[in-house]
Structures are given as structure tokens and as C-alpha cells.
Length: 409
Image 1 (tube, one colour):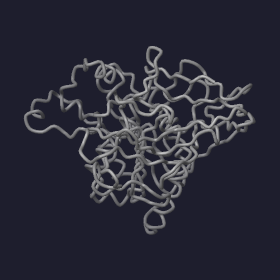
Image 2 (spheres, rainbow, N blue to C red):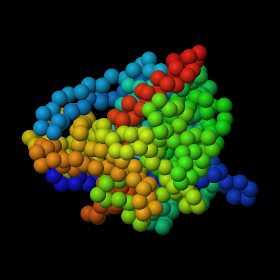
Image 3 (cartoon, helix red, strand yellow):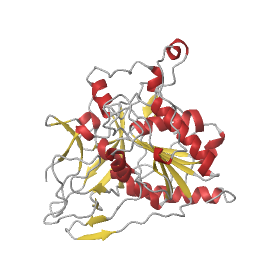
Image 4 (tube, rainbow, N blue to C red):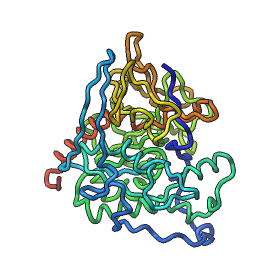
């Protein structure tokens, strides 16, 4: 079957430098124009997901059609765990279709859709918290990539809006809802960049580090020293290498095994370049290394990630999928690969001739009819590994609870 392209117009993308720069100081900060007022995270409307609140973008239908290699299908239901032992704090990728440099704090369909695709399923393992934030928009991304940045791009104070929002949301959550519970930080793309900064400034080596169950940083370049699991972007938060390890980070960027990162790849190498550093790759399907089966959950039909595809997906011959999600067990595997200066998660499709399912998967970014291979499978980083991450978080949550028996559940 044909490769399924996805339109770039609603892709969850980020310019890698965004969310990674340190705050401006001195004359640059003094020259900043008036800054919009700080976001108030006591306001329920500034959260996409918060346990027990309505509306709650994470309270979505996650029913899945599980398609086997012989074409047989069954329905898998989903239920969140209101008594989950840990929390998940999520920062979403670049999805805003607002016209300016920064998104507003108004809830839009694109924010709701990405939360359903990337976060809601983790509700089986943790309570879910997802703040809105004034992220850099898709319009800002396209303008920056074209070499014509939007007005305000040279204003340090405006450039800090998104990070300062997430920092404020994190502080509000800690003060009002955490009560000593363990926390899994979850991000993708721009969200991963923002969380990397948050960990560096507010968690790494700070009292709140004791709360860190893990940090899941998808679709990003996390710098680590070559041959080491700690150092680089984080001074004391190592990479996760076993299921029950806590206080660690999982970071990866996915590419098709048959289409490795090209020389102009956006992911798979340190950003910014640094001597002795590589981009971290931790395989959610095999934390200790080697290959592992991916337990993917894709949006069915045309609801892939950001809500649009240029054509529907034929998941199996003669099968019409009516559930919001579809799973194809045994079809995909992944392994971290180091080659040609890149570290990345190489995804292989194992479609035998007798397999009645799709012989390919969605996830490519297509523009003007051409696959943008420099982005890899960025659109579906989270979809590819969400089932594996459910297993990892379950093991980490149990280990964290066992090590902190006196703290709240």
C-alpha cells in the first residue's frame, strides 16, 4: 500500500531553537517592549486537562480497533484510572493556527486534538495536567523557516512568553495539587524544548527533583556526552536504561529505518552543536538497548495527529475502521541507531506479503508533493510509542511508590 502523506499545514512542528534559549539579560532585556500580562493558572480555563474538571480535553473516546496480520479486528476499550499513583504534566508541540508569533490562551481544536493523540491514553497510568501556553505558532514557524520572521521575533520578552507560561503553570501545580506526588513530565517537539528548559532551571539539582518519576521528551534533540547517560543538557538527570529506573529521561526522534536522517536533518544531532555531545536516543520499546516491538496507537481514518491527512488510511483489506484509534500489533519495531553523525530511533515496518494490513504507516511531512525527510516521522513520534510508554510509566510509578512509601498516592 502507498505511503500516507500528511499535510504540513497542521503538522506538530517546532523550530529546534525555540524553547531552548536562555532568558535575555542586560541591554537586550531592557530594550524589550511591553509584555502581555502573566497567565493566571488559578483560572480553570487556562488548563486543557485537570483531573475532575469539565471541560477536560483528556476525557476523550480512545476506543481502538486492533487489527491483526490476518485482517481480523477486535475492539479495545479504554478507561482512565482516577486513582493513578503518579501525575503526568504535559506540554504540547507546535499546533497553534493563530496568526501571530505567539498563540493566545484560548482553547482551539488543534490543542484539543493533540492532547487526545499524545497524552490522554496515559490517563491509565497517571493523573493528567496540561496547561495552555502562549507557544510559538505554526505561522511563526513557517515565517522563520522562510527567512522572514514575524514581527516581535527580535523582542526577548515576547520570546519568553511560552516558557514563562509553562514555568508558572508548573509552579501553580506544585503549590496547589502535587502534595508530594511523583510526576512524569511529557512533551513533544516545542513542548520537549520547553520542558528541557524547565528541568534545567527548576528541577535539576533542586528540591523538586525528588518528585521526578521520569521525563518523556519526544521529537527533540537532548544533548548528552557521547558514551554517557548523564551530562550535557542535564547535570544530574540521567537517561532511562531499565524499566524500574526513576528520576531519568527518555528522549528520541523517530525516522524510517529505510530513510535515515539526511545531512539537513532537523533531528538526531546536538542542537546547538557542541563538542563531544550527541543527541540522546532512548528506545521506549527497549530501554536497555537493541530492537523492540512498538505498541503504536494511530488516529484512524484521516484523524492522524493534527486532524488532517491528504488521504484516508486503508488499515486492512476490506476493513472499515469506525473507532477513533487503530492498533496494528507486530507490524512495527524500533531500534536506536548511531550512524553518519546522527542518533535516532529507526522504525521498521514488518509487513509480510501475507499480511492483510497496510504495508506502510502515516507520519511523513509532505510539501508540494515531496516528502520532507529532514523531519523523519516527527508527526507520529508519540503515536508510535504510546503503548510502550504506558508500560514504562507503570513500572516507573510502581518503583517510585515503593521508594516513597510515606508520600501521597
